[in-house]
Image (tube, helix red, strand yellow):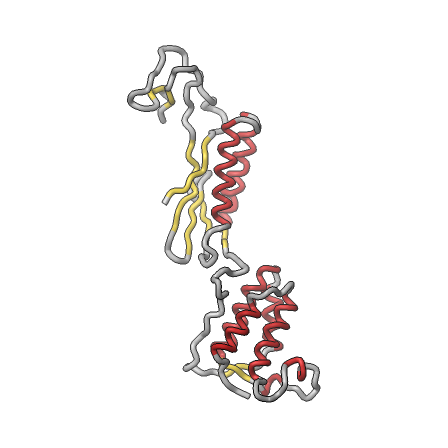
Length: 254
């Protein structure tokens, strides 16, 4: 038996790949069963009927290499969920029918019907890993300097948590790569050519005296927070010391 799988047969196989398998072995069994059930159509037999038959020879069945490769690749990607991609791919390849070359048969797309894969890809470069660790260390230093009940620590922590949540809950079909973009900032690129930064925005010290709306400039001098702001003539009391951990928040920039 040597033929291409039909569209409806491929749909049935896709349902098994993205179904409710509880582990890699169950996934392999479900997919192999679906493939051979398709090839045994018209023979009044199913894979369950023949799999333990000593006379059953898998090499007597073959599907186009394009379809065979698509099935193995998609199952392997699915198995990343359990951290067993390589072993699952090898087990599947050993149990599937053989393949033959047929350039006329296109490679099928076997992604989930709802386009919501079980696995979402986020690659982190080694340098970006170090940056993420630096961001976490910065939060620890803010807590030690200003206290975990301070607005300076809470605002920074909330903004970092929001950025991480957005990062892992982005579009399921996009493959994202995380790169460093400065001491406390990250750059996110995707395979659809979009990109953005997770940038740390420092908070300039401001005067804490009531009625005074002065902030420090980049050179350390005090200035009005906006053109019409009131700045009192007194010794300003900064909201945080210039030589301490820098408060701020993480924001998204295009």
